[in-house]
Length: 203
Length: 203
Image 1 (cartoon, chains in turn purple, yellow):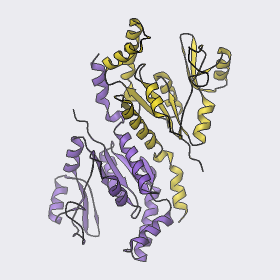
Image 2 (cartoon, chains in turn green, brown):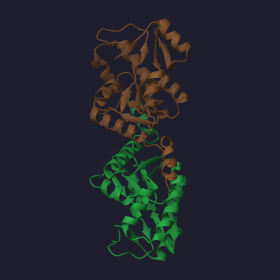
Image 3 (cartoon, chains in turn blue, brown):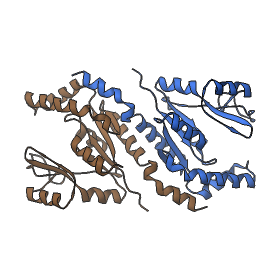
Image 4 (cartoon, one colour):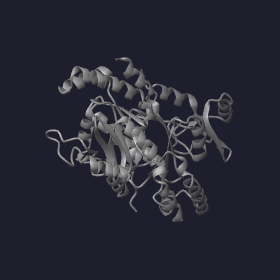
């Protein structure tokens, strides 16, 4: 029997380093899949369809919403972003752990739909570190940086709604902690109830 | 500020390999302490006071009960066994993770007293494996083996009351899983609430 994989939701403020942590974490982890969001916004330079996002039309996205094929979705600045349900379900069913990198509102939606999911909040060591990282990107205007800092503060104040917090000091340390969290998720008694039957029936 | 350590309770049926797993797990883990129980039973050959147990008198044990100095205790065959509270508290306070190896009844008492503790059930791969291990000890009579097998089956049926289950296939695998569980315990949001204040105050 294949045991269902664990669903891991990773959130954190913009600039905290979610992409960098997951990019460092995934190689070599053949037991874990990273979910790719669908979006209606046009691809940026260097963005590859099916790798960074599934780029789909507004009509196709609305059709998926209507058919309840999005696990969660949101609209920003006239574009839709969402998590296609079928891919996640299929991979969990075949025993893969699935990571969703998703923002706070989407995470809370998933919390309500799939209470067995494990919620991880990636935290900056300090707000000033976060500001430095946003400035370091070189793509943000001063006003977009203050907007992101305001948003970050609000998100961080909700971190206690998550199961786990990882303070992103260094990539290896964050990867090790994420690995422990996923390893523990796979050993949850709630996840392994069938083992009790299996072991006791063989007397 | 020193962050409080996590309290990890490890249970499992007699013969499942709790001692072997912990003996393989502990070396090199300077962040983890293994609690040593107190007992009023006389030491067996090769048992060292303060290493296998704290061997104390009935009067001393009853005095500790009266002063609420036992986190949990139980009586078997006229002897007391218990977990001295002060040592556990001191080590948690100085940031060490503390492992208690303890039977089911004691574990449930700790669950009620310290709901933040993490409960791990070590499970045999099958009941026949467990029987083989008990026979392999060479110290059990056929009737004590059947009594232990009956007790094991009852305990295993309560494993879903634990947070985590580790099926003890091999020592390295069980050690890796225990390590993940302890690593995750240290990242629980409920354990790290102060970080939210720390990070947001520095704006």
